[in-house]
Length: 308
Ligand code: GUN
Image 1 (tube, rainbow, N blue to C red):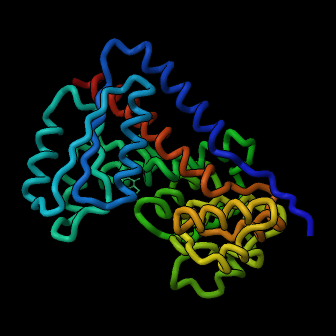
Image 2: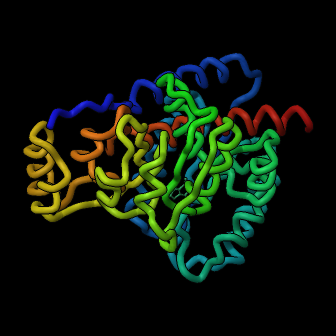
């Protein structure tokens, strides 16, 4: 069967967002400050934080990376957050997740000044978002909206189905799509007749954390499929099920060389045959996340400094 989906590349869209943010920064009469706090040695977090720091520098944001040891106590982390809350030169604070076991994530996130919460994870921002008020919105789902809009994909009146109900992606994604006037359904691990529901979706967002979970049967012909998953696949046979001849060789070489290859929650070979539009992994939504963080940092600074 012939592949038909248009691939929605995140690269150009992320560059456009960053260009616009850089223009906004240029005309500010103060220097923006973003502080990223990382606790412990999670390998993926180290890569994500590195990207955030690098992109900040590219856009002219003064960034600071506070790296605390894995055995840091909750009280110590809260002290760091309190200091950052109090500093006038810090516009955005991001506590990289996951945190070590001894620390209660929600307790720490609630300690942030909501005006500096560039991740949009504080209950005040979550509540504001759900009320349709101006809020700092979580970066990954905000990036999905950016990709859809800038690719000319209509959201209003469409049935959007999200697989996954996390606080970081699934739930805020639902709120943002609702705000764009989509009809929204959230599915999760306890959903009965998943395929029946997802195959009605005009826009299908996969955020479950299971490589290649979404198959052709889940997808309505002509749908837009957004893949938010980031998984590592090391099994060559599984890779053969996921990738068509345009990609397979490269993927197998990556597994050979690095031990694994990056795969989303959607089976790309099957999605390409059913969907009209499809975001790839890597190179799709992930690229927007950091760009949206930069946008949130500008928004946070403008809102807070106006009221200072
Ligand atoms: N860990 C995985 N995704 C994220 C994110 O968007 N923000 C933070 N702070 N940590 C994460």
